[in-house]
Length: 575
Image (cartoon, rainbow, N blue to C red; front, side, top):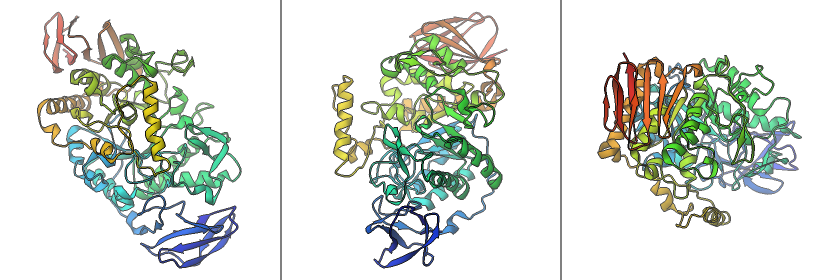
């Protein structure tokens, strides 16, 4: 019920309505308080805690005036509907990551619905939305959210998310939502006013960690588990992408991730459809995607992002080998990423200065290729570049086309980043809308960071609205020129993956990659071969008859060899 609040250390607490009147809060026990009367749909309210405030409800579903404003009561009937959606298996399908605020000119969930048919025509199976919870201002990536139960007012709120989910489901698209369970944003975070949501026992790159294992941590865990249930059960999304799970510090007997996995299996029974948990982890540990109970450290996640596959593709085709790409860039490293997923599998990581990771068991009964999400671009890998330039903007469209052939036809679950399919000319820089205290610090800090890396050009000011505007996709682009050509290439590759089971086969034991030379590889997928090169031209000898299914750039196939202009790719079927 709206207005119920947990404030175990408060000496006094009352509820303030939008008109300034107050309601008494009645103690229920264990630190919980109930308002003296139920709140009505649409009412605005906040809490006075020990004479300070009013502060928004920690469980706010709606914050129409932003992180510093009052909460709004959402009609529970919004979440009660029968859609007939049976759910779908997300893993093995094609995922599509998007940022609501820049996906369309309007930047809302309702506006995003108008482009869902484009995703269907492309061959996408699931839409992955970057974080939706309320964050400071009206623009941002969303990873500095402070109200985990909410949907940002600039995106349209809870009601708009329900409409988006239903519209996606009606088109056969699953919906994944990115959630942050490792920290809270620095501005508008009033949760510590109510209780011990943070702990000094654990530090993260963003400050104090969440209190998942200290005094009064049970309610904190339930708070975040409840926000996950709200998305999966009440709103009806099909899965969660969990941000940087390696930064979730928890020394409990059952780690927070494991408890979330356990609850999710129960919620599946409740809703009668498959629910999927996808972790972002840089640990390179196969136990992340092993079911609970199958190994001591098993986390129970259904899948995890495959950063090493990205790094291998980017460094090879983009020819960048600085920073965390230092151990990548060779054809042999790309071969290992495509066949073993992890490049760092217990050996030395130059970037980290330590041994890193553990090898996958390619014959495992607990996971397979579909348990790993492969991509060429994502919000981090584009947005954390100095100017937010996309892959084709620095490596060229042919290099992107060749790289796409490998990851879209790999044994992994492929994921596109919005606009990638047509080599969008718009960048995706980092942007934010923090207040006057933190905003200038972010601007200077980002500029200083890239200057230290040797970047001489000015970097976009993340606080400028103009920076945000540059990131908005231009939906006129995919209809012409090389943009239309690349879009057709992506549609062809995804179509081949759908029509031919060999090209979707998740069995890592069946994947073979031949390194022809330092610039050319052949990916074998059953009776199919994917030949890619970053050279201007290449010749690959073949020992059996094949037919050409698709190619990027000029290609000729004879009984003895394949001649391919590059960078480029050709997909062949053995006869």
